[in-house]
Length: 172
Image (cartoon, rainbow, N blue to C red; front, side):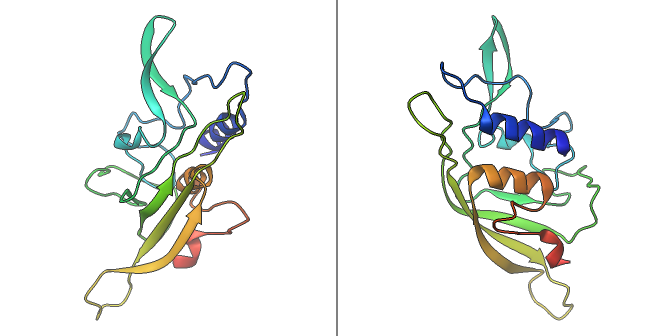
């Protein structure tokens, strides 16, 4: 988790006069099909919103990491094993939670002519109900808004910056 946060911070702060240079160091190890060590199970099919692309560098084609994050309306991410993350195991004891993106604006990396725009993600958190007489096993736990950068930090750690102080332990 710490390595992912360090990479995220480095990507966000990267400034060059020639523009943004894509990194060969990805935000996470995806060898099991999802971001290893993250609080949420973020599978490989989220490469595009995470700005992970197959590109040419030094005449070789390889996966590279950018910082133009762009999660989209309707994206759903779970913090537990799910059909696309069957082998997902977390080091955290936690309630089952899902996130659905309600709306978003893309992140635009800094260039020599423009400051970085972190974009925005508006999302709903669903948590598992613990009431046996309930007809639905999920309840809306809240509506939140973070920048695309903060949203990725939230997916990694399970909580966001102190500004919003969104901590998923409150749903236990």
